Length: 122
Image 1 (cartoon, one colour):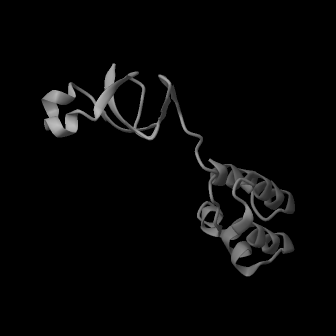
Image 2 (cartoon, rainbow, N blue to C red):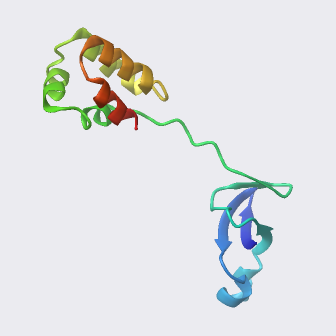
C-alpha cells in the first residue's frame, strides 16, 4: 500500500515510499492515508473506498475534424461544398459528446469517408 495526501476527498498526491523518509516532517504529516497500489492523483477517496472520477465530456472543434481529413475532404470542408458541411460546422460548437452523430451525418452525406470518421473519433 502507498500513503496518500487526501484533500476534500480527492487524492492530492501519493508517496511511493515512506513519506517520513522523503519529505520534510511538516509535509510528511499530510500523507496519512493508506491507499491501494493502483490509486492515482485525482482519484476520489471516500470512507476507505477508491473510485475513479468520470472524465468530462470532450469538447469538439472544427480542428478536431479537419486535421484527420484527406486533402479532398479538406477541400470540400473549406469550400462548404455540401449543405451538410455547413450544418456540421454550426453544430460542432454545441456538440459536447455528439461528435459520433456529426461524423455519421458527414459520412452519410459523402463529405468524409468512414475511415476518416473512425480516425476523428479515435
